[in-house]
Amino acid sequence: MPSSVVAHFSYDEETGTLRIRYVSGMVYDYRKVPLEVYRAMRDAPSKGIFLNTFIKDQYDFEKVE
Image (cartoon, rainbow, N blue to C red; front, top):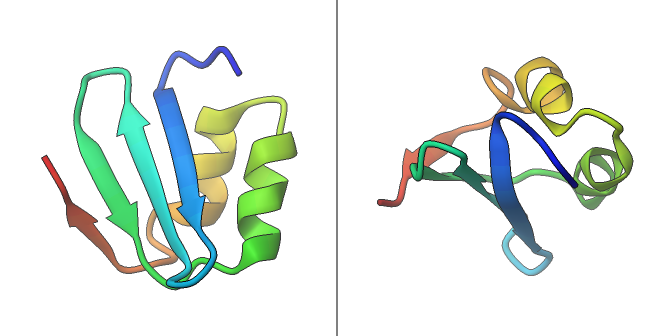
């Protein structure tokens, strides 16, 4: 999963929370993300493009660290 934007991401099915750790070190939780969207991101060739197109500005988020 090499990406110039996303260092790591994980998903909590119970809460629908997608946690993104950016290459910069910042961590954000995106809320109520459907499992299908997480799976699509997991399979996307470019995590950064997918994130910018389908996650940012689409879901509520909270800065974690």
